[in-house]
Length: 156
Picture 1 (cartoon, rainbow, N blue to C red):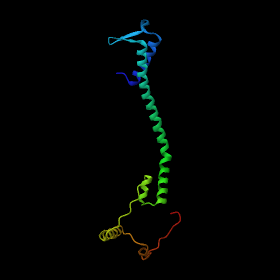
Picture 2: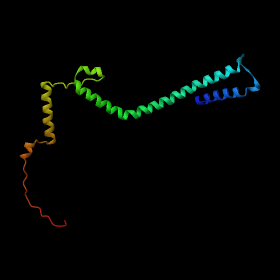
Picture 3: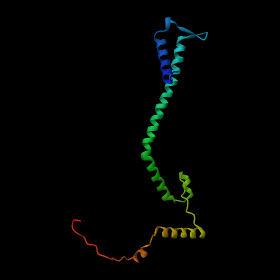
Picture 4: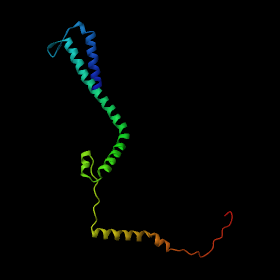
């Protein structure tokens, strides 16, 4: 089976060959029982080849555009984030008017219920106990005693 590029090249070569040296000097070809002028056959072949070429051109243009987008993203995305942060700082992080600029307002942190606060406090206390974590004042109360002297010998 021929690839699409081979089909296009075959159409182009056939059109060029028929245009430069028609077989037996013919001015018409009998195709499917119908006499078709050589100029019409050549025009059809070139038109079909042009359609294939247009697809290749579009594919190359797409690849170039994709490469351009990838290159641009390296500078555009950080800049876009900075612009968004600047607009949010000017309008207000939670202002509903941010939607006008295509930005979502920041969500406010939910206030905890008394039950949730108590649970979090118990969890913090249990974690500090499990990890033997002490605050700065608790650390000040810890004093060590030296029980025996250690002699340091030179070289060793």
